[in-house]
Image (cartoon, rainbow, N blue to C red; front, side):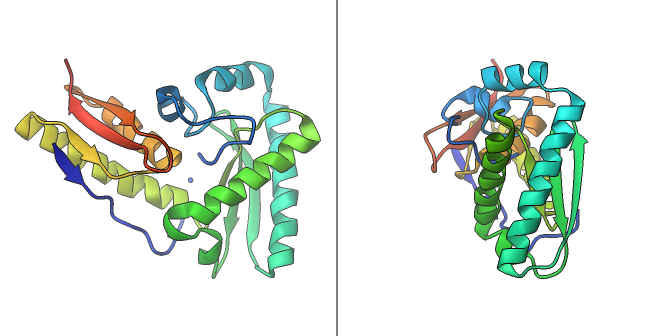
Length: 206
């Protein structure tokens, strides 16, 4: 089995899931492959899509934006905050200079901030949120990197016919890889292990 490492992003680059609310988990395969990005279970994700309209989603993004703005004030960081609804989920994007500390190593700080922001939304609405928080375009840049990692793994699987085991990733990162692999023929991807060492194995399709 081949071990493949993921390139690391030290600083976020321009431009787009997350940690879960305390009430959700991230130990099932459905968590990674859900149409969501990340950590909501397939069942809760389906319920959210049925129960929450676009107006409610935008309200969630507004609540989240207010929370993030207050957090930036406390931390004395400057940033422009955009709230929107995209792909059926609320989003908040923070753009500005010197925001790297809000992203952290491999996006760890960003994931924690997203969980806090989702919790703030939950406290006001009583509805678990699939809110996506991005800072400095980190997620969009990371998606591009992970797409390259996934394509490289697929090429190796097709060339050698052996499974390729990627390094441990967050739920957001796993979702990015699953999306790319699932769009290609002749290969499948699956997650193994438990957090924080959960990872993807790409293997030939049966």
